[in-house]
Length: 355
Image 1 (cartoon, rainbow, N blue to C red):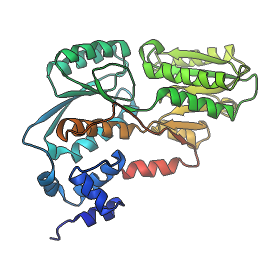
Image 2: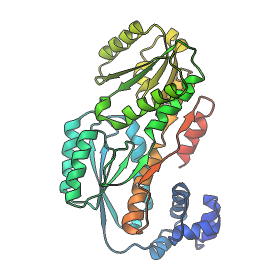
Image 3: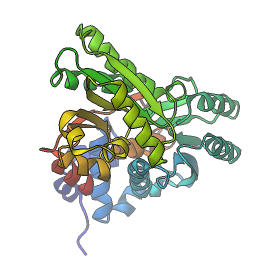
Image 4: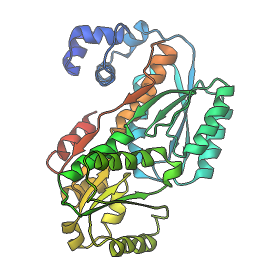
């Protein structure tokens, strides 16, 4: 059987041999997505033994607790989970042992229970999406007592015990939505921002998005386009959700733009009439199947993609870089915000399926 060479890996990964050498031998800085592609190509070509021999890994086992929303409670979370699992497979030769502590994204009590279980297991680090801001800060304080750092994804909160954050800049994503609305709206038309889920006061990324949207309008002196904010927690009850939606329509006859602050745009859009679909300009988040379907049917104008698969992957990669390879890592790692339209959505689907 032909021995796999650096040249082979470089050809598959589409990079130079020097870049492959830097990744395999941990020399120099290489962009995270490029390193991911190289490691993936190396493993697929059967280069694992070579990687093990040349890595800085010892016989030590490293433990990471992953406190993550159960994808069964919200389909969006299947994407960060994919990135986490892919990374764990790629870096398994480093002796990483991961344990998942899943919780229902809407159940604060369950989140607290799983965070307590994770802390009790005394891992080397905890990777989490801090879905509930107040409670997350409390557990971060507890973790500091045991010298357990946090790696956070998706939601950015400020605390010295956070080793790094990987995800979107939520303020900028709201600001971006404001720019997109400016291209569509006329003076006097209203924008409704809808959050289906946690309250703004206990979900930092939602309030940051709203702040970014309002700031853009203020900066552009769009004072004739009023922005109104609503939240609705019990979105799983379709009859209550429909009543909520009808009340918004009744109260806002000048509503033209609708901004959904998370991946659940489809929940309300599927309740709309055909006339509603023609009437409103809609911006949502995240490339999950129900939203992609609506985008292709011209029922969503724009999807802002926050690269959730890469969030999960880089969460694990930062663990490897910090604990095993002893590399310095950036405490804040913002990912690109992609504007996905009907015309380019298939490109993103193909790219995600390939990665």
